[in-house]
Amino acid sequence: MEEKYPFMLERIQSMLIDSVLIIAFMIIFSDILSNFKDVPNWLRAILLISLFLYEPIATAAGGTIGNNIKGIRVRKNEDEAQSINFFQAFIRYFFKLLFGWLSFITIFSNNKKRAIHDIFSGTVMIKVQSIQSKTIKNHE
Image (cartoon, rainbow, N blue to C red; front, side, top):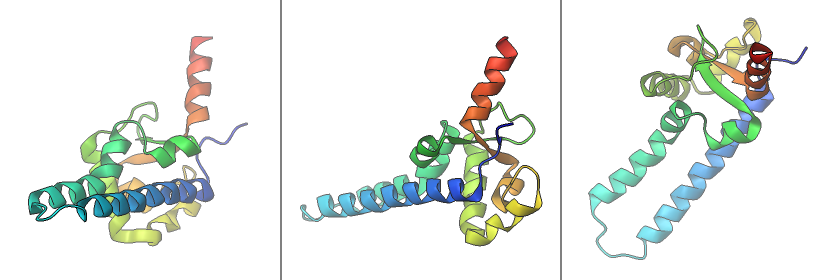
């Protein structure tokens, strides 16, 4: 039987992909802004906030770029077929930032491989293949 929940390595790879993208956008934004004199602070704030909100917005919209590349998604724990809303994604991201790597210690102690930030936000990370398999079985 195919594993339904991603391993720690898949989650870390997804996070690294997203981190590299965020750093790349920080460099790009900085490079572009350095070409202009007197860039308004509100513009700098919007760019910074957009980088900060990337993960919760992308997660609520279906998945981050790293999630899509690795074939994993964040879903509601009580109904793994349902995507999460922005509020759940933001709470999840807040606790992920708050606990950092410590958040992952619970992955090894529960059968759904939920991290602390997943537990606090009522979410679970699943593999996309398990979603597709479930959909195919339901239609047969």
